[in-house]
Amino acid sequence: MKPFRFSLESLRTLRKQKERVAQQHYARALAAGDAAAAQLADANRELAAAWEMLVTELGDGAAAAHILGRRAWCTALETRRNERQAALEAARRAAETAFRELLVAARDREALDRFCEKSRRAHARGAQREEQKNFDELAVQMRGADGLLQLVGHEN
Image (tube, rainbow, N blue to C red; front, side, top):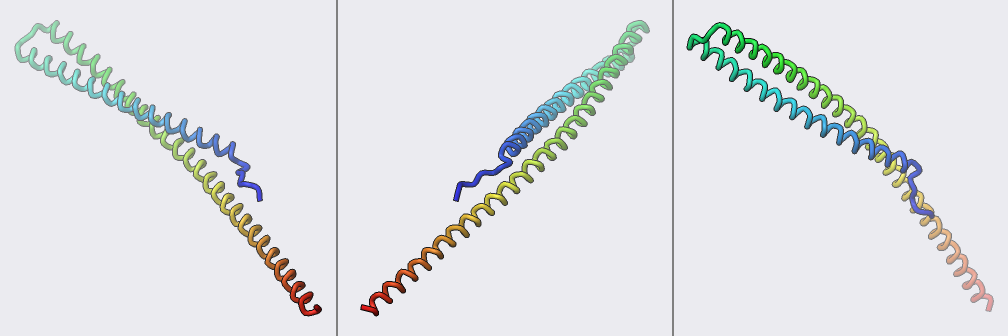
């Protein structure tokens, strides 16, 4: 019997590649999320420091123009923090989407792997049946030859 050859091997290869691409996409999305979280943490620290500086200067009796400038800076930092918060949320959504894509790609590949393995087992069972059939035919032929030898032996 000829060796096993999975007819959908090229599709199986493509699904493996698609899963690898999905894994890489998910890894990049997680890295982007980590970077966005780090940027948000930096923005929060910078904003907290600016507010602390404003409160200190208010307590020290700084000039109104200086306080207004500090307050404008705090507003700008709040805007930056809000933008980074939105970027983090977008990165998390992108990571969730990439994870779902990874799950779909893995599920598709696993389904094809199961089909391949099922086909391989069916091929092996067929090969065993064929081999057993050949052994049975050989045994029948040998019994027939033994019977002929015994018959020839009795006639002589």
